[in-house]
Length: 320
Image (cartoon, rainbow, N blue to C red; front, side, top):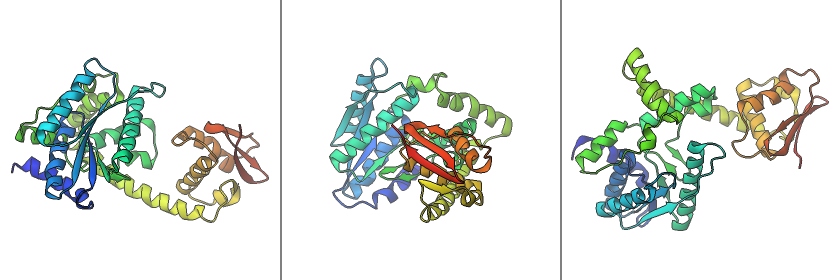
C-alpha cells in the first residue's frame, strides 16, 4: 500500500479501536482532498473492525451549485463503499460573519445527526496546515494560551486524526486511490481571513524564514495546549473553594494573573454570560476591579451580567 495511505490509516485506527463492533461513526465530507482522503481511510479501517461509518456532507447553501456538489460527494462516497451518506442542508446566520456562521451551522448539524444516529465519534479532516493557520489567527487576534493551542485532536465526540499530517499528504492519498477531490472556490477568496493566512501570510513566512514554519506552529500549538490544560486544572481546583458569585478581591490579587483570569472568566459564565461571549477586553475591565481599583462603577457584560466591587468583594449577577 502506498505510504501516504498507510500514514493516514495509521492515524485513524487508534480512534476506531476505542469503539465496539457495530458502533456508528460520522465522517464530515466536503469533497475536498482532506475530507475525501479521511473518508477513504475511515472506511477501510472501519470495515476491518466491523464499525459502521456514515458519511455526512453539509450543504451550506451559500454558492450556486452547492446542492449539486453535495450530491456528487454522496455519489463518490457510495461508490467508495459507504452504505449510508447524509446530505444536510443548513441555514447560515451572517450575524457573526460568514466564516463563523458557516462553522456554527456545520457543528450544530453534526451534533444533531450524531444524536439521531447514536454516533460514537465524529471525524473531521483538519490537517497540520489548518492547525498552523489557527495559531497564526490566534496571534493576530492577541488571543490567550487556550486559543493559541489550536484544535484538539479529540474534543468530546469530535476527533481530528490528521493534525500530524500535511495537506500534501491528503492530496497524495487521493491520487494513490484515484479519488477526484474538489477545490472549493471560496478557499481561494482573499475576502476570508483564513484564506489570506493560507495563501499570503504563510508563504511569505516560509520564503523569509525558511521551510518548516507550519510544522513549528503546529508544535507550538501542542505546547500551548499542554500549558493551557495545566493552568485550567489549577484554576479548577481554586474554584472548588470559592463562591463564584461573591469573590474576595484580596484572595484574587494574590493569585498569578493566568489563574485569576481563568477564575474570573468561569465566574462570569456561571453568572449567565453566553458561552464564548467574553472577550479579552471584557475580562480586562473586570480584572481592573481587582488589580486597579479606583472607585470605578460596575462592569456590564454580555447576557446581562453585572460585576461590581462592593466592600472589597466582586459581586457577579445577571440582571434582566
